[in-house]
Length: 460
Image 1: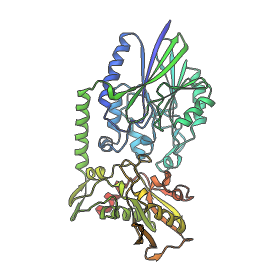
Image 2: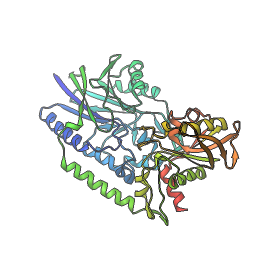
Image 3: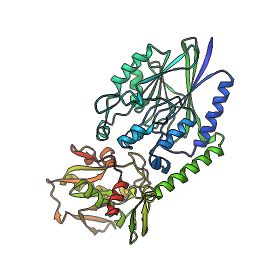
Image 4: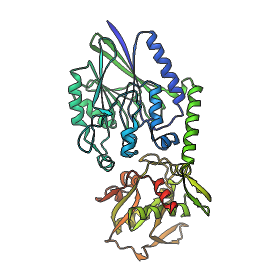
């Protein structure tokens, strides 16, 4: 007998709940329609559903996100790097305590090599009475960061190949939930036999009608809940026939006021929880300027230097979104002004490399550079602000200020000397300053975020 199975998928929502009221209503209505037509429907999420940029996620450490997934009756999820490396070990280990769905991630282990009890390499879901779907998951192997948090993440391909081979014996169709990125998705299809469908994530790509690679159908639905992906499987008995894919624009879907009301209530409760945690009382305002050194940015640079025990601290003013006013400072305030999941990092640089960075950071192009990614959730790079660095500038005929001298802790910068520089991990990972990105010695400090260092410094 011929039957149709529908697979819906989301990915990289990043706690962007703007379209969640539409998505919930749409998927709930579709589930009722498929049930009425005796059609099977499955729902998967491919990771980075949570992001601590949102106060709901920050206050509940993602458990409210899990509740939202429960409400929609997801059939399986995998984890992204925002689940995996922006929560501390215990927070991730307990994240899915109340989950009513399996978490599939084949390449995550405890330090001792044992799988966590909540993470499965795969599951087999009976979509119909005769047709079974095997679901395998894998996440991006940020191995060093996972190690710092007490986990062991392994390269995904060997684990995926073994899991696919095993599940293929039990299922009629194999779906991979891949939080690995588009290039890795294509490699999965090209090199791992037995994969029918790859639902992709991590690189925020969109395949409007899917992409076929080596007989496998690659699917992806962008980011931030802008789209919902849907795969249509035509099956006969235990044989998979045609598979097709598309993405649907969540922005034009009907709106659920009930879901919007629930989100508002969740946010109010989360903000109240954060506001209840006071970290300091300021006797004076701490002003902020994105395009000039200012007291709040200097405080963060000083906190970085002290926390990382470095020669200098260095941070772009754009990571701070607002100043702090005198009076009580709460975790709500710190999350509002510094919402990014950014960790401190210490990097060893030669003086000549440090000079190149300081010169580049001082350009108007870099100060006004607008970007998103690498953990940055702000608007603009802003002025680079230092602790332990003095810069002497001179106004020249072109009307611009040019650097004439650089001193490190009162002494002239030495080109061949090695300096310990405390900064943010986005510079160590991202392409902004090649000297930092390619540095041989980097030390990451986890699970603390920049706002945790601000809280620590203000409490002093």
